[in-house]
Image 1: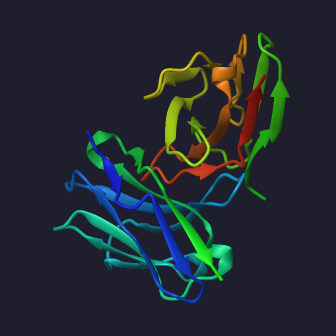
Image 2: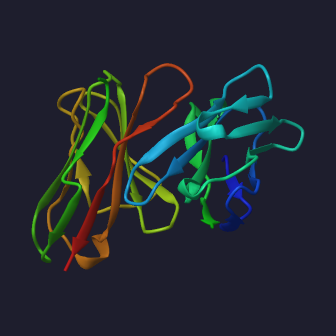
Length: 114
Length: 113
């Protein structure tokens, strides 16, 4: 079964500094990859997705992620964060071999400090 | 505008009450899901449906039940709420075909006293 690991449960970062959130998954056969953001007391909103093609994916709010098949990773980055980026971030993997079942990581809480 | 709605957003009730959390989507999606999420924690799939009259239990055992009588509507019911049911409940939907990008509602935060 697919498993998704977000290596950092919390990431404190100063405003305007870069941030990287790490995500690794277990099966590399055929996957689609997603990053979602959850603001307090809200549902999940899609940041970006990798379906095929270029391994560097750009999303909303200045975020981007890079798919690395050999390392089974899909790390999320932003070169300069804002206070408004304080939120919980979830990596998710849709495994084609398992009928496109979506598996979520445990989440990374980003706290942007002024 | 295509969207997914959940009501109520917040609910505080006493132990033993029957409750129904509503979820509706206007995107015409066949697949719908319910997740349970404790504050600051990961999502746990508790129910899903691949279409009308189709419901399945998810990865996390739950005392709740669901129904899918109409494509757009996927309500979740607790017959007798307990404090252990206190949590956030998120509803999502996705297209039948494709890569299972899921669209989420705003959630219902349930507190059982």
